Image (tube, rainbow, N blue to C red; front, side, top):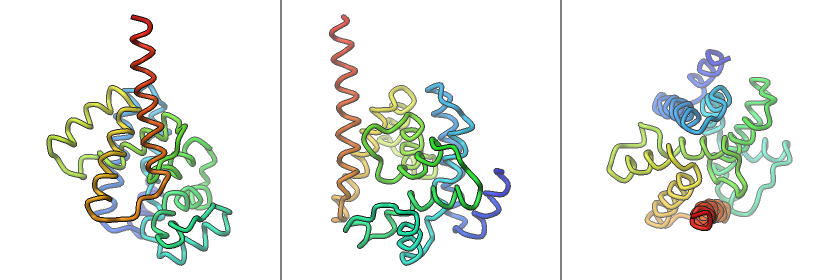
Length: 198
C-alpha cells in the first residue's frame, strides 16, 4: 500500500510537502520504537497524515460536511484546519484504511485533542519535529524529550506551535490549548505520582 500512497501523494501534494510527509513517517517509526508502539500503525498514520493538505477550502468544507465532521466558526473561516480530519476520510475512502487508531491519529495530528492515544501523540509530535522542520537547539532538545516522554513531547510541541501562532498574530483554535493543558497535566501527575512513591 505504501507505494500506492506515495504515487497518489506525488500527484496531489508539492515535492516539498512530500519530503515533509516522508520525514513524518520516519519520525513516527522512530518514536514508536522508543515507546513500544506498533511501528506499522505509526508509519501508515505518518505517511497519510497530510493527504488533504492541498485540498482547496471549498473541497475541505464539502467533504467535512458529507462526513459529518463538526465544523466550528474557526474552521469555517480557516478550512485548512480541517485537512487532518478530512485526511482521515480520504485514507478510508481512497486507501481502504479501516483501523480506527490510524484514522484517529491522522484526524488529530493538527489540533490534537485531550485524551489522545499514544499513537495520536506520536503523529502529533512527528508532524512538528520531523527533520525537515529545521535544526536548532530548541528543536533538538524537544526531539530528545519526545523520545523519553510522549506527554512532555506533546506539551512542548503545543507550546512551540502556540508561540509561533502568537508571534504571527494568528487565530488559535481552543483544541490546541486544551491539548496542551491535558498533556501538561499528564506530565505533572506523573511527577506527583513518582514523588508519592519516593
